[in-house]
Image (cartoon, rainbow, N blue to C red; front, side, top):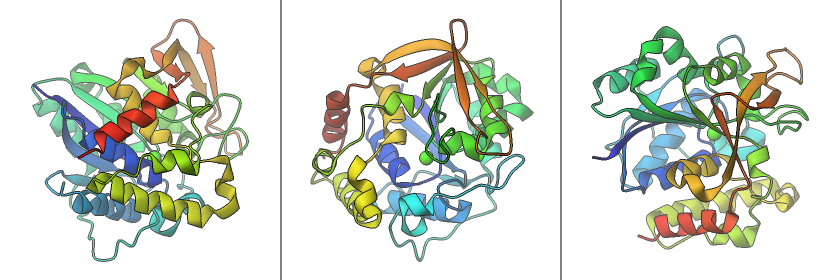
Length: 299
Ligand SMILES: [Ca+2]
């Protein structure tokens, strides 16, 4: 039986490649893709996802809009990093069905699933936090939660905070304190995984997934100009890779404390090693990561 998976995300250039990797995993049954605002407005993130599924012939997978703002705050978008519409592509002609609701969807899918569901969260954690805040019993039927977010002693949206946790620190704090094992991919996990343009070209295979990846990454390097010299940081893609191949990295066990202030420290995180339910991914094997994507995008 395939592993049922729900992906919650905010595409986003790296969400896009992460979704492609997940869609190519023959062992997973993607029940649906729930959307939060973050990298772009909720509407843009939904349209970007519809574009990704349409261009790769995956329109049978449901896309469900969720949070347009954080639990207590407004999202700060990432258009200046990701480009046009938050992913660099034209999404004219795609329409959002606001009748659907991410929290109801996640709840009913978990309740109705025979097998425990794996949840992969690649954006602000608003949808996931609200779902389990309302119904903690659901956790019994969750296989694992994989979260991309947070940074220890560094940041990308401020010097102290990572984008997803900054955008909804209350949600991040709630999810990371759930009574559930969580695999966490932070900016620290990605220290050695800045892909230069040559490495990015390795992801651009001849398959439809490789072609759309080529379009998105080419536009990103063009849009960022000199700012792209440091390389492309495939945050969300690493999260999916780690959940597919757990031994692609090492781990440290502990708990995480998250700052919920209203300044540049919002979302700033501290890792407390030792007892705790958080398994923090470190030392990613970049060569295996690139090979995984190339193999996945080979047909
Ligand atoms: Ca994301």
